Image 1 (cartoon, rainbow, N blue to C red):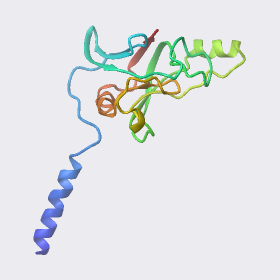
Image 2: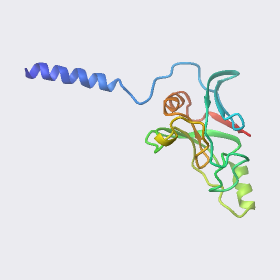
Image 3: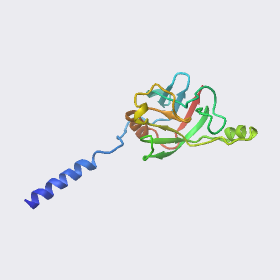
Image 4: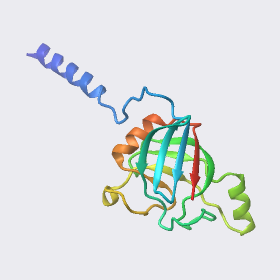
Length: 163
């Protein structure tokens, strides 16, 4: 009985070890992330080919470029995916390198902080179905989509956010 129990535990352990939070992605590399705020769309691109597209939610004040901390806007411009958080309060997240030097200069001219901590992330239960602009300036997709984004987009990938 003990040997059978150990064998079952070993098989269970191997099964659970194979069930990760992150799917494996073996397709073409994502060479660029494009976000079109007006369309509420995000595209994962390999050179000129769109690999995936997603409906997105934005900051609670989505029109216009982010200028200062707390304005509820999603930034516009060219950035880099520069960090990952597998323990995000919004399921999973990947960081956008906002603010860039131009963003810092604009905020400084206004005598304000540009803010920071802009991410692409999942959604809490309240916003699980999407269709709403609710973040503090981040880009939100569904949790299922975020698993895919997290596995496909690597640190160092350029991201362009347009109006």
